[in-house]
Image: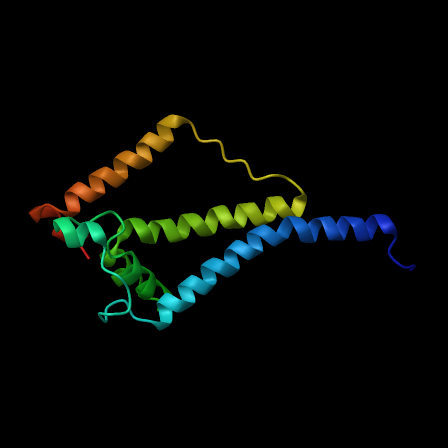
Length: 144
């Protein structure tokens, strides 16, 4: 076997460039999760209070997200879902999209996820319903 040719080296360099962004994003997310996993959001003073909650007493869709991430990192899926079910579903969704992105980058294909506007409206409706229900007395199970 001979040495790799210029075309092979160019192909490898192109692959490394294509993989750099998804791997960089994963590194940033992993770093953030590592920090949240090591600094417990259940102890006061480590993280700022949600401004919407502080000013109005209303839980936003993100309230409990840090506690959810902390529980998720420590393998407590039940506590993660209890702190913020939407965020927990988002972790799995992120993993799926990231995996797809990595595979497509490896193959030299762009990541294009074309969602019709109805899907975006649906996501907005789910977030709105989640926010309203978690702030009502019968929806207290969704509150962190």
